[in-house]
Length: 84
Image (cartoon, rainbow, N blue to C red; front, side, top):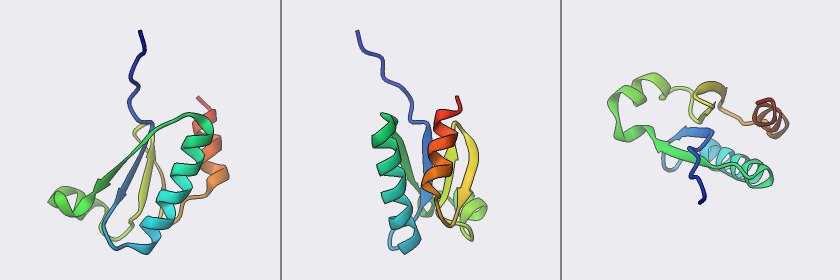
């Protein structure tokens, strides 16, 4: 029986954001290499998320903890995911 794991990486973003598109590519590549998953959340769908992250998107979380904002460094993300 296989277990479904929760995504370890969350990316708060919004449509039409160039930095968000770049972050998605980096996160997708690192997660694919490490067999991890990620979830994207559109901050425009929730006023609280918009207030919290509107000026800093994209914002990434690893295991529920804030990791990066504006840009995602692939090496730093990889290290955080491997540090478990």
